[in-house]
Image (cartoon, rainbow, N blue to C red):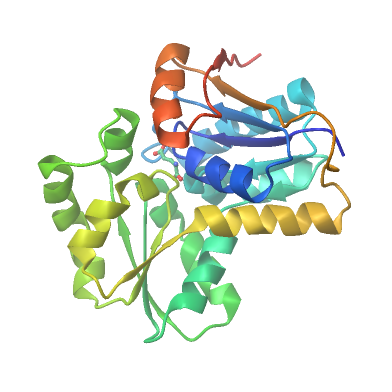
Length: 267
Ligand code: DGL
């Protein structure tokens, strides 16, 4: 089917999922909205994040006629996934469940960890998703306020991030987890520092690839994948904030598919 796949995040984080999706399904048209005008979502009340998520998802459906919505933001998934699945007329793919599945598949010792925003960790979404897998694991969670802000400013390495990471990762580090899920789509951009602080024996699990696999599975099952051989895939990026900053930093984070950004308005 020729219609695009829609995707949204509070800002640049969902580009980790977009990268994985473009690599796995290079033939698919994609429309991505980064809500940089209203980021960060992490500290906001759940009801507010839910409302933002509904606005973005409905805009993808109505204005861009997407055939599926990928919620490329853990905070929005945690707050709104049930509502979105119930009300949208297209399939909805989230990042929480694929990430939890990958985490329990990865661990050898059964001691696993997840890090995310205050909103995501406070929601208990990962406790429920990990329990739903049925795996006998012990989960330690830690919120990492501040990580997202560094990425949104275009800073992904350096002493300040390292100092913050040492403090925020202490609970999962001290719990002796052998696998750590990056439960926020911004965090793969900080993976080098997170990996150094956790040490070489801890496997970092990113939900980006797993979510792309989930999207392929759902679209394939429903017969919605785009056939080969037509025009090249179109990748469209919108931002509710400064679009030249979105194109500039977004292009550096995602790669050459992101050259321009268009303005997104809620209406
Ligand atoms: N990338 C988001 C997430 O996955 C969001 C962060 C934020 O805006 O605080 O949780």
